[in-house]
Image 1 (tube, one colour):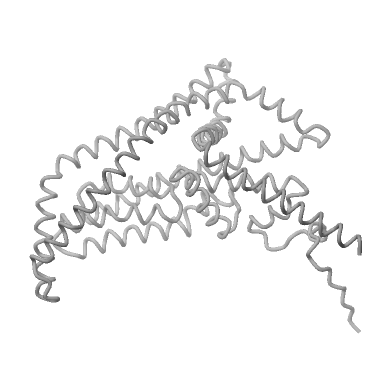
Image 2: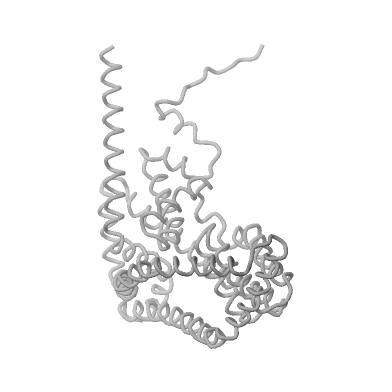
Length: 373
């Protein structure tokens, strides 16, 4: 009886400690989000650039120069992408007056249809529209203040990411020795976890970038075949938004549909734009991503959704982007630490837990073996 009471007290104590640790971790991640986003993003970029940095060092580049070349490469690619999008959006802005006129013409057609079919008078429709615009304008001030107040912190993080990535690459040997010594008597377990996490993040990021390029081409070709204006801009924007899992593809489909509704006379073009997004998403989900990204982040759908929800709550859009690779790295840690292997099994896609691991779970019953005859 005393043993059962002691075991129950020990289980309650462990549960309390785990709950307290999770709560404190969530609080730290939320209030320190700028720092953690900076560190995690820089770390992922450093993992991705590590092979290139080592290749340059084998070519007799000094360590600092190899790291600098890698960081300048990333900055150049991002600057080129931002320049392209900015250049195309400037042209888009020049056409806004014509788009506004086309939108007004479409609105008149919608008013006429509503009046004829539902007897919703144009005066009532105009009053409703003005009310919605006033409501949007009143809330827009608060949104704008929030955006501007966050702009400084965002810009500071963006500027510091290349610097932190450069320092991580320069100090990679020191971190290698640190993680090796941190493992102590565990035979380099910590270093093994870091190496596996680096391989996972590198494969994931390369796969995501490759998928983004392929989707940019597919979306742009589809919109060009439909004859949509700004087809390349719409295709690239939809591909970039695809980085945000589950939500991004649908957000990326809104702008092409709106452009099709405004610039074309037939509803079929809007349906065609939606069809392009659906077809590319089908190809991506069933062929492109499984082949290119593969099982680099082998976590199950439930864990993915929970991770995305938690990442969005803690860090917003950045959290949605980082949630999947960070959860994959967490699974690597759980798979390597014996006491955390059940959690790695819970996060992963494995269907059969190893028998020796199964017997370590205290609440899992051991069924007696059956004999025949």
